Image (tube, rainbow, N blue to C red; front, side):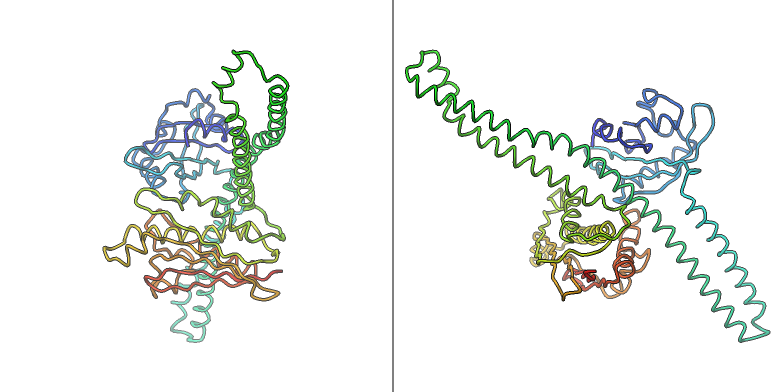
Length: 453
């Protein structure tokens, strides 16, 4: 994304957004950033990020490097210097728009948020966590003091301490999930805004294509009638007809209008998929077509399915059955499809990088596939299967795939929450089942079973 393209969609967003290079140079900003600093946007042009914050250059460089190397949004904290000399502590969320390559620097999108305006839920959660941590410490001290006096009391205190520790872990997990939910909600709002801005001009073009074709057809019909009634046209007109090749023009013009219609319909399909995916912030139960949610997730991930650099093209095989509409939380199910499909793509990319020289592994690496299968189990249940032919999962990892914060990815590339959140959405929110079947070297398959109602 170029700075000009960034400004085009940033104008409609109320959030402070900056586009910076991997070295920290400000490439573009929107008006909320200038308002936050008390400056004009022209005064920010060409500045370095280090000039606007109180953090050291090393800290800023490390944060930007973390953003450049991560596929996920990286949370950080920046203290801004305002024009009036005061400072403003902001939470920052950084994400790569253009991946790093030897030919070009990273383009990083930073979203700023005044920490004092953060949701009260986070403040309350932090207070609760601190209180419970102190309570755990007091219980542990009481346990040591009472151990010699009463064995039974020691057991009770230990049980209570364990329960409090579990509660503390659950609150920490909830806090992280709230951050994840906020990130997904922001993404949904951004996608919805972009889809809306694209849809208006495309609808205008699509609506006028029919009239333009009709008007052109009428003009060409008039030319044909003129040719029939006046066959002996002047020499100048005959030369012009030969030069423009009228017969070819008539045939090609129809094809041209057809291709333009197909193109605008394709854009409308993309906009529809973006709007479907932007249901991320919906919290109400709705009756939806599951296939639309899967297709919208595939549309968002389409750039990762295409061949690029050392990664071959990933083929998606759809085996859709005739499913009834399902009553569910569509935005949350979209998030599950997105997480599982993204993990499948990661596994196939890892296979491409780690492939050995044997013929079998080369054959698998040259034919990466994701197979999506849907079926009706019975009148009350449906199933969605997403399988890849990647490296697979060994036994030690297999038992932990749904554990919170467990990940086999390198630092900055995964939080270990994707499958954990997906499991919670399917099992707790929808009363369904989420299972993983895998053997090393034979890929992995995730099976989602949810009730129709």
